Image (cartoon, rainbow, N blue to C red; front, side, top):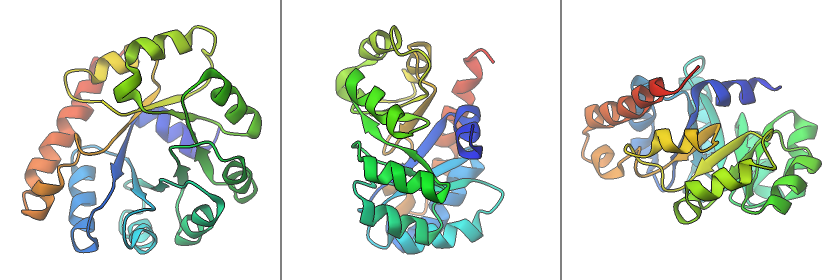
Length: 212
């Protein structure tokens, strides 16, 4: 098991930062860390993503793992790796990206929806998968997937909010990916970073309801 997978299974939440402006990124990242978040991804379709990832690796060293999201093809994987991304997450299954990650020693967690895609991802070398879009599929779908596929680490992404986060884990998720419901970009832009921290803490506190 890789160091990143260990962290994922321990901390259980990956914060997704999409569309954040460079000038707001550092404050947002620090606010999330202050609220207990230990894994953060900047999506590669965010302007300046690579430079932000690179800066965060130094800025938040020892405080959080920094990855790249929306890594939909090999060229983006190469850019993210060059920036220092510690893990790569995508909404799709691209076996070239998985192979690249294995060669470089970078964790790759591809996006999947069907049982066939999950098995294909694992056979290609993925150590965990991102089940997406969970906001549409729902936790019942996750429960059914877990029947035959009970040993694949799953990051459930989409639809997670404070009232249902525990349900996601009880339905079989090992971790969740969270964007706007965790990080309100309007708060960030308005300088209300204390609200960002408080919101993050609500989610990290909610996970204490889960059995160890």
